[in-house]
Image (tube, rainbow, N blue to C red):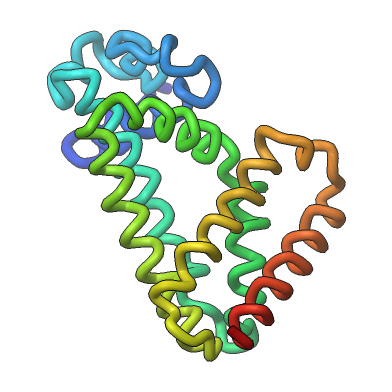
Length: 194
């Protein structure tokens, strides 16, 4: 049975997915147009046809991860799940389900400090995600939710970073979830009383 080669937007998504995988597993040095073609199972030259430059390829990675973040069903909580628990689930589930996205994101964030085009993509994506978070915080009764979204996002990101690249890798799943729950509860309670 032959593998169906994606076309159009599906091919762009396959290219970005393969690029993210490569950044996560091989680092930025392992990311080439040819390597992406091979990883995605595409004919040679496909990646460079859609994304001519390395900068365009890196930006495609950032945009694809943002697309996945915004598409997550968890951004709209089920009726039986409160927003605070939703935030815990966002961190725990992301660390469990998409560790390669997280590793790639941290690699790309460091690279962005040297590439303004990539920095712009990361900054715009971060703003969008913080707007979603600010809406959640406002619904939780956090005063000045737009301002509070920054430290809450930074804490959540720190928990994720530690889970995939720091000492948090040694925690059991249960201990990690408990720590996330405790940390977010403490931060949110503190923000309610500022």
